[in-house]
Amino acid sequence: MKAMRYILASALCMLVSTACSGNKKGEVNVNDPETEEILAGAAQKDGKILVVFFSHAGDNYAVGNIKVGNTKIVADYISEIIGADQFEIKTKKYDGIAYKPLCDLAKKEQQNGELPPYEGSVDVSKYSTIFIGGPVWWGTYPQVMFTFFKKYDLNGKTIIPFTTHEGSGLGSCVRDLKKTYPKANFLDAFSIYGHDVREGKGRVEKWLKKIGYNK
Image (tube, rainbow, N blue to C red):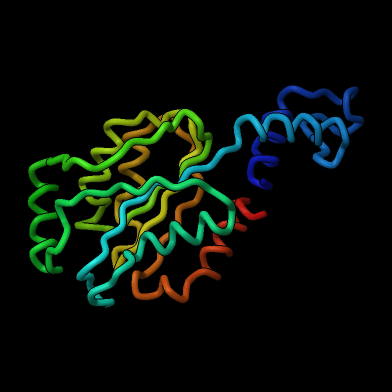
């Protein structure tokens, strides 16, 4: 992956000297056969990518009753484009609830600091890069995602946030993640209107290319 090559190349800059490469101090030639071998070995060991997301199907603002949630569509784009694994945060608590009552429930959960349960688990130790996506509910990720954040320590990993929304953009999602994982490495986040995701694969590809995660 290009992103992993550039990240590892940057790290190697601190380890190589002018005598080793013939370059100016601090430069690494990623096309050099020896460097290629080092990068390839490290990427194979540390380069696994995971997409963690929560997505709400059913009654949604602007798109009506949908079988596949907006955020899942974006998560599927990411996995398809870069070959990442997925872990979907699923809870039955929100099933079958109409849009307005769900908004009221989400607000109450946030005000009370509730941490709703979700299904399943994932071994995050296998992954060096984790995309984290969800809809923006009352300015940040849904509270069920904070249940996940409390359980898993992602410090030391590369975190890439993304959101779907209908006017909130990224909200405070990035800030909240940085507060939760102060020792993680964050790359540029992405947000897209929920009603645009079905025609938005090109925008996701452009963003992934910008941050170096394209094949």
